[in-house]
Image (cartoon, rainbow, N blue to C red):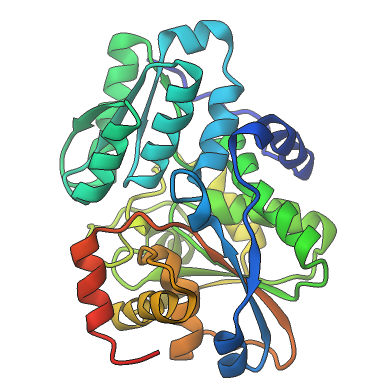
Length: 332
């Protein structure tokens, strides 16, 4: 089985290296001003549209950085991963482009739309259990049995550095940003962005966003150690999953760099989804709608006149669930 050896914590310089490595394989996404959210919050609010990546989510950045860093011998062996969907698609996409075998392990909670997308990218799919922890166990079994290299979805220095390239783009487009709103699950995204941004603007606060049901990183921070929680149905299904009992990087990085994590009720997430459709013309998943939902519901208040960046993480959402959520909201 692949050994989970600890390597040095990623640093801002690793994010710059990741940017050079992945540039041919990702899109530099736009940062757009939101008149409505600015009007409501009394701040200047900008949306970082990672839903416009080829795979529909930011995850392509970290997956590409990890797979591109593999040796030729490791690429010949192939890769395996576990995911609630978006990371799986990203690994499948970059592996397919590089001619690397990819086996993706998911739980039976992953929506059909995401399963179909994983298959379209050409990956082999294994469904195991009812939680991300179950999918991870199957992934590690495959690694031991077949010699496949594990591409962790968040707790990996290469993945963290890849996601951090979002932070570099944010600083270029909005160098005087005052506050960031970033969805949080396993912590790879917010950790990477924090490394990039705080190396240049150490005083910029980062607010993590998650759902009320099964917010494992939040619970782990309160406990002072990684914990597990049962998974529940939520519109923000991309934020489900544990952080790993032997978490090596993201728990500590989030503890160091994230000022607070705000938990949102399902109604606020649905409101964010409706806003993104009606005001921005975009169908996004629940996790991606947490930022708009937090501002619309008042769960997060912004300093008057500040400049805020909100990361819109992805658009891989089950159509039926999306329509049901949007219809539950009268108007935005």
